[in-house]
Length: 311
Image (tube, rainbow, N blue to C red; front, side, top):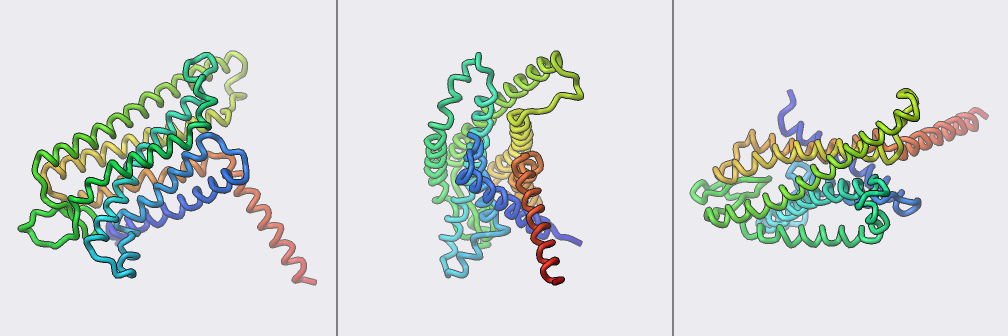
């Protein structure tokens, strides 16, 4: 029988491998080819997801810190801070990805079309702002996390491996929740608006194409496929986020984390970064073409090796 830890280990290991492959692919595209506006954002998102797995407590930075003989308190503060930063980056970059794709597929007559030429120019600045915002946004939480002492009198709440939140009064607790929730609700709202806009554009485009072609001849353009990928990721992200949000806010107010609930939350938090690369790999034709070319080269090298060895 598999324990819940085995499931989390498998999920984290599989997620890291899938995201590492996708990260290497985007680096290859960005450096050696003509990348699309969304490629740089997707590259950043895969890096964030790898970091999320490494700070989740399953495939953890704790093991590295233990080798370096780092103090437990520093290990907790560093791991917890990085995990919160990466969670914020995940929602911010996913939001940016949906906004950029909405601008990319917008009709030339729309107001969003005026931003098409500016997307590439300001992409780096937008990503720098997102990173700077999240690095500074989560820094206050360092003061409320410490090594878990397993002493009930301290009213500590265990959150990740060997780490716990320190007691805080209701005003500070409510303030942290309000600020974090406001940020996340705003970004999720933007994602839902852009997703609705993209669905409308796709439906309108399909209706126009039906007048010119039969249904059997209709084929999705690269932009439409990219839009479908992003829509799927956004919907999946929103569902996973609200499950995580409900668990977090309930546990935060009750100041209690049930081990089973914590395991479910970890699984749900890791579901999005695990599914994302699989969806992108299976639908992105560039990745499929690259894998087919690699398979063909390996096959030809195998035949040459067999031929020369038989001589």
